[in-house]
Image 1 (spheres, rainbow, N blue to C red):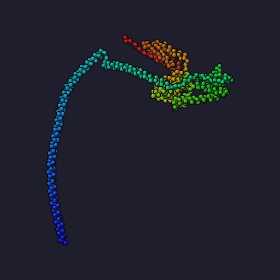
Image 2: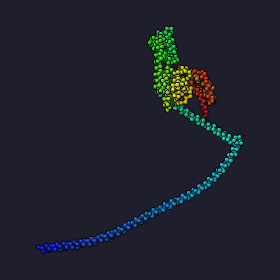
Image 3: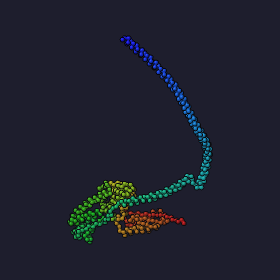
Image 4: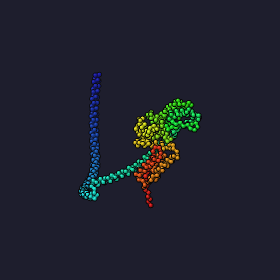
Length: 511
C-alpha cells in the first residue's frame, strides 16, 4: 500500500517537474518570438520615422524657401518706396533751397525798398515843412492856429452830421411812437365804455299842487327865508305849474336842499323848526351817500387803501359837473383808460388807475380854495398822504407842471380822450362852430399863413405857413402871437394848443 503511495507521489512529482519544464520551455520560445517581433516593429518604426523626418525636412525647406522669397520681395518693395521717399525729400530740399534763396532775395529787396521809403519819407517831411512854412507865410497863421481852425471846421461838420442823424432818428422814432400811441389809445377806447351823464346848476322839484307853493313861502315869507338860509341856495317859485326850481352852483347844497324840500312836501308840515329838522336829516343822508359813492367808485376802479377823507372828497364829485360831464364818471373813465394804456405799455397799472381816479379831486373843493383844480387836487393829495407819483400826476394833468413820469403822461392822455369823446361835453352846435371858425379866422389873419385847422373840439389849432415867407424862427414868433391874440379875443375853458407847421417842397419834371 505504501509502495503504491510512494509510486503515486513519485509519479506526481515527475509530472509536476515535467509540466514545469514544459511551461518554461514554452515561455522562453514565446519570449524569443516576442523579442523578434519587437525588433522587427522597431526597425519598421525607425524606417517610417526616417522617412517622415525626410518628408518634414523637405516641407520645412520648401516653407523656408517660400518665406525667403516673400521676404526678399517685401524688402525689394520697401527699398523701392524708400527710394521714392528719398527722391521726394531731395525734391523738397531742392524746393526749400530755392524758396530760401527767393526769400533772401526778397528780404534784400525789401530792405532796399525800406531804405528808399525812409529816404522818400525824409524828403516828404522836408517838403511838408517847406510847404507848411509857405502856408503859414501866405495864410498868416501859425501851425497851432491852423490846427485849431481845422479842428473847428471838423467839429462843426461833425455837429451838422450828428444833427442830421439825430433829426432822422427823431423823425423815425416820432413816427413809430405816434403809431404805437394811436394803437394803444384806440385799444383803450375800444375796451372802455362809460355812461354819458349831463347835469345842470338847477334842480326841479315837482309839487302835488300849486297850493303847496304858498305853504313853502310861508307867512310873510318865513319858510322860504329859513329854507334859503339853511341850505344856501336860491328857491325860485315862478309861474311854472306844480314845480319849483332850486338854483345853486354848489351841487351838494342843491342836493341837500332837494331832499329837504321833498321830505317837507311828503310830510306836509312846513315851518321853520320842521325845515331845520328835515335839513339835518337830508344833510346826514347826503353825507352817507357821498361816502358810499366814494367807496363804490374806488371799488369799481380797483383802488384800495384810500384815506377816509379822500373817499368823502371823491364821493362829492358825483354832484360836480364840468361842461355837462359828471366829474366822478369822468374820473372813473380816466382811471380805466389810464389802466388800459399802462397795461399796453407794461407800466404800473395800479399807479396809473389811482392817479386817473384822483386827477380831478380838486374840483370837489375848487370853489372853496383859490387856484386851478389841478394844483388844489395835488395839494389835497399830498396832505392826505398820497405818494409823490400820484401828487405829480394830478398836478401835471393839465400842463401846469411838466409831466416827468409815464403815469403822468398816461393820465394826461386819458383825460384828453375822456373829455374829447362824443357826448362828453355839452355845447350847442352853433356856438361850437362859431368858436372853431373864430379860432381859424384869428390864425388866418396873420401874414404868411396858408391855412389853419381847428381840431379836438377847439382845444388845438394847426397852422400851415408859406415856407418862402416865414422861416423856422418866424414860426416860433407866429405861434406866440396867435396864442396872445386868442387869449385877448376868445373865452374858452382850459387851454388851446397852437401848432405851426412849415414845410418846404421842391418839385421839378424830367422831360
